Length: 515
Ligand code: NAD
Image 1 (cartoon, rainbow, N blue to C red):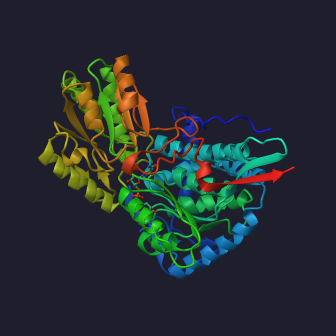
Image 2 (image 1 turned 90 degrees about the vertical axis):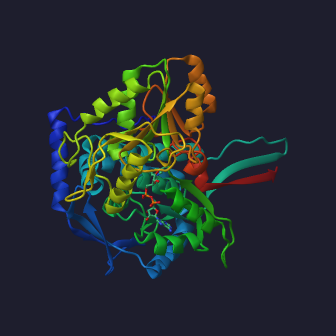
Image 3 (image 1 turned 60 degrees about the horizontal axis):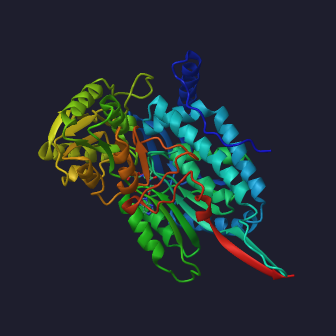
């Protein structure tokens, strides 16, 4: 019997034994730095001349690994293998598919700190953030395996005397999975295994700055018994391989997580029916956010300041759920701002390999340049009251930055920055705060800090965000507890880690037999 799902606990790094295990993880990762990794197509390892070089964002000179880069020809080869493998994989029993996920979860649990340490090195994640990313990857495996076991016999429908009706789910076909760098383990693994456990085959194109962790995950799936050709590893340029696979007539669905711009491009291209294509492609797209925390005048102001600071600056603000706007009732604005500045000034920025570092670097030079340009915009649109400095000499470090007194329609209040910058904006009253919260094209996460029950209930109805939290920060959704996904330009609201997610990877088949 399968034990009920419970999310993976976070590691207590206050304990010396856990610190030691993490340091051993770092040592293990250091032992394979700079290795070369192939593509995996139908189980075959293929090395290419052209490589994607993954570097440590805390230290650009340190190469994490070089990963082979798929060309269109190799992407085509992978498509053909995935297409053929689908014919056998779809016949494998759901229980057998689920078992592979359970085994993969067990393998990762045994190597938990190695994986987290790899995230520290490859993605610049501080210990606790890396640990949460690994825990979430385990959760997706455990949760989707159980979900599949629940769905395997379909959903009961009515029958009449002399008639037997059934409603079952069957897989779709070949899925192209395109994942982002900011949850390079959890989202990459979660989107891949959701497609696999439902009986589809996958072409996985991980983000170009974090391909090594994806390769290591493929090894885990193989060790767990996944047959060759079910998941094919095809890192490559988004524009070249990404477009090719999205346009391909044999692509049945695309599971994308990333920016609004790329998501829209994929959605548009997938809508076009190309020669030889006999279906309408399905697109799961989880995109950006401009997430708001609202502070009411009747509220725990210490909780408000703490929640804003941790939601804005955890993992350098590089979460789609990160708080990038604090909208505060005018009566308490000065007090919350002053306390948030104090708390921010206590944060340490540096190499995340050091356990005491609160905030590591941003992802790469492009991210550094983009965030610094928004700091400049912030100087024009408001007051930079703390932070505002960056240093890209060894790694891409930016100080946690608060921009105060930003007007509700400023660029800083509308555009996703994806870095450690939060705008503070004053609201006349609670209704005005909700109006501001809803004034972007996004609708991913949000939070309200309030002790006023009527206002909480008003926000529950009117604050238009896919994940809305009360009296806590707006980051940190847990698989199976807070299904995650956003409204409007934040995507298709597919709710990863939720009860409806797997169904998006399948199609319903009705059979009716006269008895
Ligand atoms: P991105 O859009 O730049 O890249 C995402 C993936 O798309 C990468 O693998 C990239 O190589 C690929 N890609 C780029 N061009 C492509 C093309 N033409 N065709 C196919 N694939 C292409 O995003 P990113 O910088 O990796 O991630 C950050 C973004 O992701 C932020 O906007 C963030 O809000 C969003 N995000 C959303 C969620 C969510 O659940 N809603 C979760 C994490 C991140």
